[in-house]
Image (tube, rainbow, N blue to C red; front, side, top):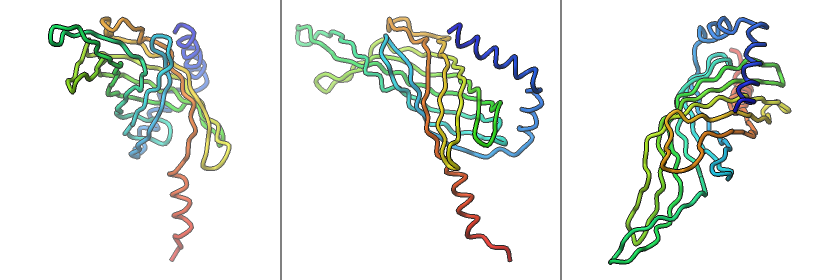
Length: 215
């Protein structure tokens, strides 16, 4: 965590010398925001096992510099745990799996942008819950259910190798503000992304321009 936060702190310090960030953000917010929706996938770790976090984000994009909005996320954790219940005076096993679902408020600042390269700093505040759930004999069971809250900061970079395609990735950290200690799991962990982007908006504008003729 210290390494990741140190890297982000150094970059922010360099940027604050190289350009006035507040002015850059202010100028971007003066521009009309365009609504956008995107799907994303992040990788993290729970109990030393890699998990994927799937999400959908909806928000506003101001001049491709400042983005913010709301998202919904859920893990596909394969982490399982067995609980026990009394059924007909017998102890039976209840197989369960871990659930980690949350809504997020996110913001992103694109601090570097050229024709080919892009660097950004996304942050996120997540509100949701964790539990173990399972089904036995058509009955549902939920264990250790609790509200959770966390903060994420990431450093992302992308390289645009073709007009409508780019590849990139990111490195960051998730810090649990309100944790679920009953789970007995470490949810404060690194996160990383590997992304392949398709700029459908640019393709749409270029295609539309082919069929628009001046009168």
